[in-house]
View 1 (spheres, rainbow, N blue to C red):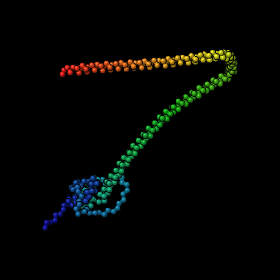
View 2 (view 1 turned 180 degrees about the horizontal axis):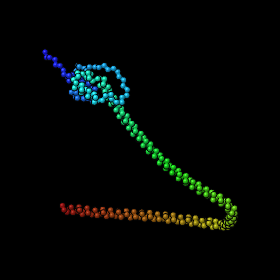
View 3 (view 1 turned 60 degrees about the vertical axis):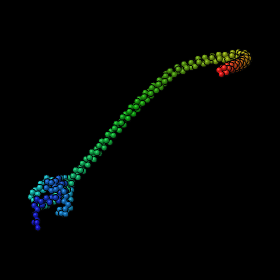
View 4 (view 1 turned 135 degrees about the vertical axis):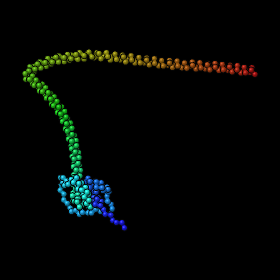
Length: 292
């Protein structure tokens, strides 16, 4: 039977610290600093549990204990060879340190998110302000152009109204100052025009009367001349018609004579060809008989 080996104080301390690996890591204390393997104990043994009552935390502004103090206390505890951390290192202090580390990490994360959101909101606001400024500038430019155009139109209208007023004033002044003289001149002009018109009217009537007296003989002469022309035209048309028929008949006779001449010539040529062919056949037949 082998005697049971007693564990050294340093091994007992390492075993005790191995139950706090997660807490030590969260606080920035690596298990290797205490000579503990970086693995979770999955054996049947469990770390002793300490019942901790409920706690109430308000908003924290700073850490209750620094990580350096916790590191120094843990290393000092290992150097003294204590069997468990609870004999020298208070578990409540370690729990508070773990909570504070988690709290300040979450607080810093919330601050980063808030800052990022504020920066994003600021960029959106700047973009909206930039778009609004561009729209405002464009609207002002359009308004200035419209204003210039309206001012130009208003000035042109004023000039036209001023010109019209001047014309009306000049006409009114002329009517008031020289109206009587103008009316007298107009009456004189009208009398001269009426006198000339009456003179022309009398001359026209006299001319029409003379034309009526000379129109009747002229009409008789025109009727006789028209009858003579119609008679001549009828005779000329008949003469032209007869000449056209005679020319047509002459061309038809010439065409028939030409066809007849061509027929006789063709028959004569055919007869001559037949006589020549008959003569050649006779000579050829006679020569063939002589060759035999």
